Length: 443
Image (cartoon, rainbow, N blue to C red):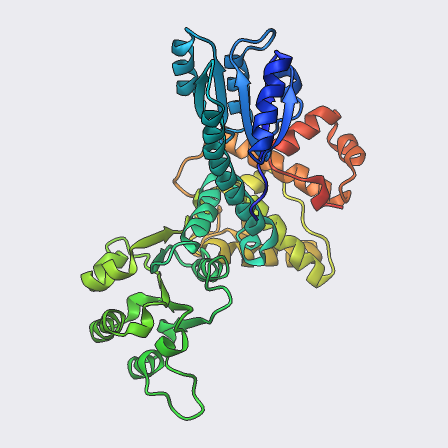
């Protein structure tokens, strides 16, 4: 993943450009040279694999303006500023804006190399992290199952990536149906233990004695190894850990503290509590809780995920439409609002079933989204959450869904989408960029 780092040199003085370029080339760097900030900005994008060295005083776009423009493109791009004598106050201001460091003319070439090396190391780390994140979000089947682009989901994906690279135990919390077990799989697959054993124990599926045997042994003939032994060196997932009795909690804590072979085993504890007066901390022994919760991930409930609700409904609906050989129902603005306002106590799992029933209703030519959201006690209107949402959120969610559905129907034909939605190409492009919709996904 590590890549070579280049140095972009921006200076209106030809001799200075060539001098710096020659010295840095001797230091092992490939260089790009530009006579103006305007020329450099045509090349330096958000993923430029390098560092920028720029003079402060230049005609046209000066160094300070150039620095601000670069930071708007990529906040993680290191920029080393070269200042003339007496420009130190300006250099201090450049550091405040975000410059990596500055050199005052005349400067020692070795000092230039030292700064370039530091900046290159910082840039390489940023690019490697971005590449890893992109690989997980684009290439990993597990990460792709974490559908959604809402801020809470983007934060969740970042947390999974960060914690997967760490080594401690993890406590995963959230309401039922939010995807906690999927997160446990992703933590394992994205980390150093991906090639090792992944052992899942659904604690709620065992009686007390059977659970004790499954966790600690002794194993019966032809039965799998006790989970704590089977998972050595890999990941042990304890689903519904809140059902463990005090006795089993004490035994688990003892095993964690005393068995040396568990030192290289990561435990992911999944806690599934929804009662308002109970928390994972309140149902687990304090010493066990603190051992397992050194790192924590809390999954957001579906009702807090905004436009992800419509994205998920469309994705699930397409899968069921293919399965049942019929078309996906197109949502009206009112139906989209009803989906966004529903409380979703069953979260993603509940939405999955609603999407299936919506497809079946559409095949039969009857029913509505509202009918699927009726309460058992009051069938006159669909249940709505009491959590308010701004009008802008409804409008944007519906707009994204409409463009997404139209792109899917026309298999990525921009012209056909423009005609159907009566949008000029520039407006459509801007909206697709805003909602992170890629034409290549529809071809």
